[in-house]
Image 1 (spheres, one colour):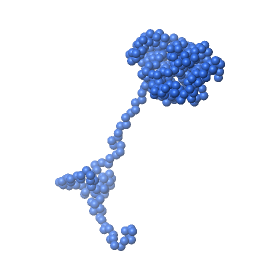
Image 2 (cartoon, rainbow, N blue to C red; image 1 turned 90 degrees about the vertical axis):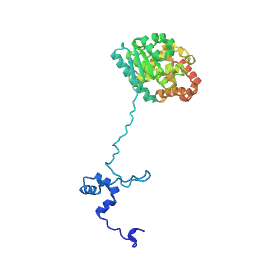
Image 3 (cartoon, one colour; image 1 turned 180 degrees about the vertical axis):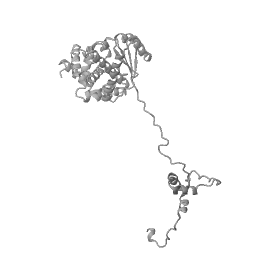
Image 4 (tube, one colour; image 1 turned 60 degrees about the horizontal axis):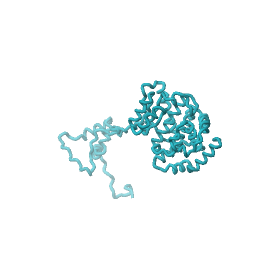
Length: 342
């Protein structure tokens, strides 16, 4: 039953404005302080001000609320902002030899930037933060590599004399800018020098990806290792409008037909010592990824990720590509004997 209908409850006594302010001081003083622009508010504050000779009241125990808190100012939620830590994005680093001219440095930067963007878009793997070394002096470049990879010392002369570029396990790769593979038209894609250089950079970036996901430390099949990097490089050249994929594939077709080596033989990395077997490996990856979304590049990255996590390479192969390895080898052999028909 409401108060208005109960005759036994007397109406509340009238309270003067001054008395009301005294009774409600605990809750009103903050509002009055905030609205000091009001004349009435200022007068009330004067009358409610604590005398100077009055002893301070004992504070309430921690578990009891303060009845008359003094508000010196109205706090703002933005008065003491918390600084959000900045996320520092990894930046690609370049270490150029003094013998590398500025125009060539610009080419390398542009190739690395577009390659990293392509790989991230297709696989989700971000290779920002990669360190790129480019020297004209092959000996100095290899010695730079050996500073952090001393276990590769027995390969020093081969790297110095025969390599164009190579990837390292610490999110880095190396380019010898005076090597024939860098200064002449690419024998693999048949394109001009510039396109061949982009191809080399994209190829090595895919090896950086393999290292990054842990797969390169357990290279199970040489043909998939090098053929996959060649294949991704060709797809990147096509998508970045540097060179048409079909033209690159036609160049590989001619060389792939020269070699008669089986994929079983090409599982051994040492068998990939000539461009013909690189091209044959490229054609194997072309067949393996045929019909897959985005050319199967995401599938290639997923395969190396599975291997990097410790999965058996043959189980990972069957799971990712949807065909057992031995069955695919038979399929490739038949396709190669027919001359790699479309």
